[in-house]
Amino acid sequence: GHVAGLVARLDAERGAAHTPANATLLDAVDLEVEYPEAQQVRLFDAGVDLVRCLRGRGLVVWGGRTLSPDPRRVYVAHRRLLHLLVRAIRRAAAPLVFEVNSAELRLSLVRAITSVLLEAFRTGALAGSRPEDAFRVVCDETNNPPEQDPGQVVCEVEVAPAVPMEFIALRLVLGQDRGLEVIEQ
Image (cartoon, rainbow, N blue to C red; front, top):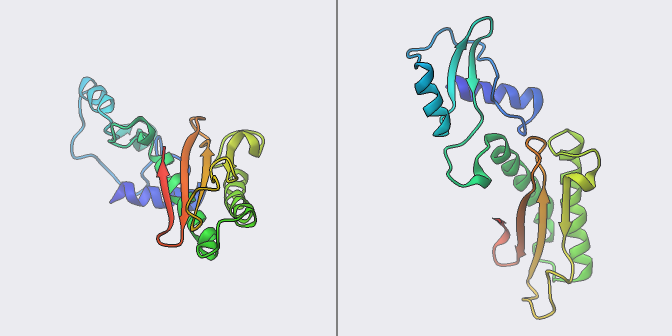
């Protein structure tokens, strides 16, 4: 419960894109178990984020990783940022679900998605000094050929979370039958 409270506090203070690693638990007073250094290293290597008692700092979350073996899903901050972005993109794309695949629809989707990503960039959630460094959105005839189902639109999105700076690729498929589907590539 204390770590969940810490994450909620950090969300309010800094936003969901920031890691809980190295953050101090304010209301916790002690650990039930303190592991020896060698065991801490093994647990960290296994992806376990420990809470450690550090002199002068108190109880600190030591790590910001998930337990996923998938390298694209290693960082808690990345997962939380992607969930936040997907929710915002779903809301922005919702009015467009029943539109026919056309150049106008694709432009509307690019604008809606870009608006969400620009806001994330402005708040520091995405890397780079310019939006072009932080994200890319492609939704045109290159990924929507004429033979494609007219009730389906594909957008390719890449985002670079602020830390560490590496792109995460998403494929967004807007369809009349199922709304917006998000596939992480």
